Length: 176
Image 1 (cartoon, rainbow, N blue to C red):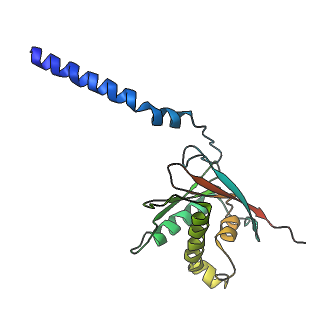
Image 2 (spheres, one colour):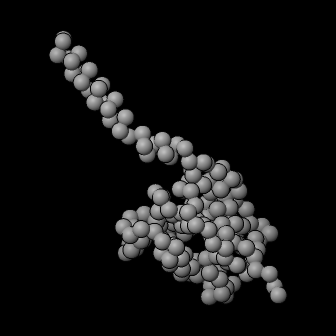
């Protein structure tokens, strides 16, 4: 019986010391501010850099959170095929599902703004093959920024899901 109690005490002490060495990450992540309006700090790490991208179109009149979620579902289906070099997961987040989050998974190099823009260019290729755009003969005219804006996304965030998030705010270009 004493042996079992001794083993239990040793195991408990080992667990306590393991818990004492782990709080750095959990405490740091617990201290991050969560913005429920955009999902920052909850769905992706805090944004480390922001760009502004002029877009040609504002939100379509009938665009709503359901359509934005459908869009992200379709992009995930189209990009989950064989032969992908940088797998991505796409989600819409925020109060109105108006932040498009592109999470890079399995990418070994550090995520940079250049890689983030490259991933968005790849998404443009995926979006251009969408049957709706092809039927409207818009497939070569729109990029991911224009499509996202038309669907009502206000921001696109590309993240590694760990440390880095690059945000692109979408603003309708003024007609001068």
